[in-house]
Image 1 (spheres, rainbow, N blue to C red):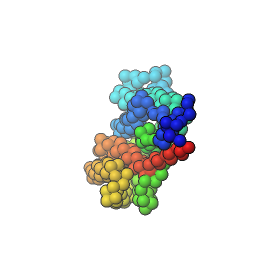
Image 2: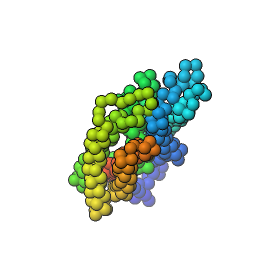
Image 3: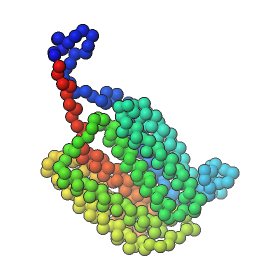
Amino acid sequence: MSAATTPAGSAPVTGRPRDPGAVAPSRLLRVSAWISFVLNVAIIATGGTVRLTGSGLGCTDWPVCTPGSLVPTPELGIHGIIEFTNRTISGPLLIIGILVLVLSWRIRAQRRDLFVISTVVLGLVALQALVGAFVVWLHLNANLVGFHYTVSLVIVCITAAYLVRVYESPLPRERAVPKGFAILTHVTTLFMAITVLFGVLTTGAGPHSGDESIVRDGFDATLLSHIHAWPGYISLALVLALVGWSAAKRLRPLRWSIALLAVLIVQIGVGVFQARSGLPPFAVGVHMVLASLTAAAMTVVVLRLKRPAAPAAEPAD
């Protein structure tokens, strides 16, 4: 039935596909999502600064800085200020996490994916605050500090995933690349994860414990640094293969594969420099932040393996 012969009072049938994402994420939601991502990267930078300046116990208690004082006292010096600054970012992180969750909840009928992801992010941010408390109470336990960093890196990846989804249609997704390319991408992700794991162990066994009075025992940091490098170089080779394949076939992940390659090359360069220069604190801090950005870029590449499926047109009468 054509639009001209449609019964009075009913909408004309145009044959256009239905759009289940008619309620698009607001500009405020998108801006808030970006702020959440940036703050989660920033807290890795400030957390690294705490560790690399020996300010891990700059505030000796939690949630207050010292017994009887919420903020650092003059006696704590610069270490107290650095540690308290890192803690302060947790407040805006929690607030922006709640805001993204509320805004996602308002469109949950159309964008359940965004609501679920925002819930996970807020839960992990709350978990991080609790883990941070135990880090102080247990006097910078190396394993707990490593877990603290790893959770932050996971949050960065999830907030990156949220940004990808907030700009895409909520339609069901279908694979947009050859199966072999998808498999290669997931193998690359595995080696990236192994690289990060050994990076965390290497830092935990190294000289930057977060406080001068704490000495790390256990793993051989030099041996771990070599083991950490091997999957890193394998990851580089795999990413080069991804870039070459996606460029040859003009695949959807091409641009982000190139971005991933660029960040990874810088990351490896910084890693080699710090290993050969006696682990200067600034280089180690840059390496920590770049690790989160590399993981975020890898997350985007994985999500670009699929695209929203074209909706079926309404059947004609």
